[in-house]
Length: 93
Length: 215
Image 1 (cartoon, each protein chain N blue to C red):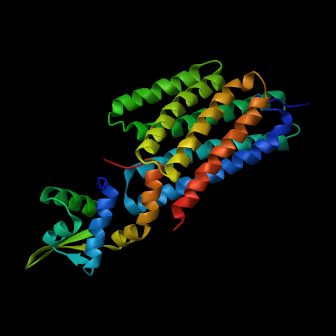
Image 2 (cartoon, chains in turn blue, cyan; image 1 turned 30 degrees about the vertical axis):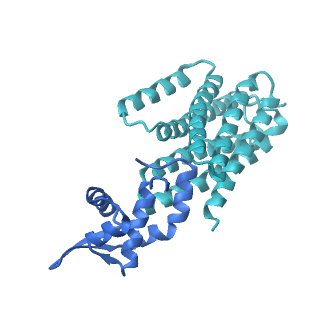
Image 3 (spheres, rainbow over the protein chains, first blue to last red; image 1 turned 45 degrees about the vertical axis):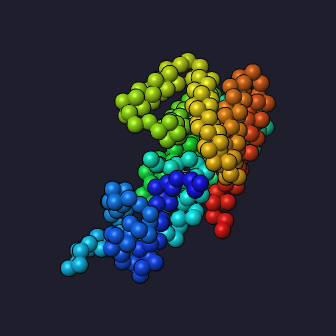
């Protein structure tokens, strides 16, 4: 069984899903791509917005999310960050 | 005249400065990396970790600067030397304990700020009020490091990887070094031995940092 994903990994999966769709995604697609429940998705979206990794935009077709420069930088440094956080036990619940 | 300072043998003071400067460089490098990663990820614990390692680095910087000043000042009086020793001791106690308390806060996942402030007060009051404060300081550091090491052992058990093992051993060595420093009042050789154990510990932290950036 695959171990439970931690927060940083979920952030990375969500950002990667947005990045793979040219930096813009609808919530339903994001929910499917990042394998999260509706409640969890909303919780993580709020966290990503708070950390300025994504922007929420309102269009005539509904809400969409775009990845920011900070989000792209997080993706780039993700591998090193996760190793550092793992080795020093700095995961957050 | 041979200067006995911090129970250190006089021949080792210069080596001690080199060791302490080296520890400070390693700690600052880790602290800055943690802060840079905090800026990118906004992971709060990374900021606290940067603060903890930065605080311990400050202790080593102050201690090595004062030691270097002692060697450079040939005309320094015995009273001045003792004053400088007290200043260094106070810096030693404050910055090291502050760093360890922050690490403990991260390790224990404390949510209750009152409990945390009580812990800080008890530790600092005990350390500063005690007459034989250098020994008490090492005893308190050892207790704090025992809890921190236990936390890193649990992390290693949960994630048995090279990097978690390195960090766990590094903290265990720091714990042993502090235990060793308690014995420095018995014989000055323990002061030298403690530095070598600390050196091995910080080397392991550095290797872990290098592995973090290895693709």
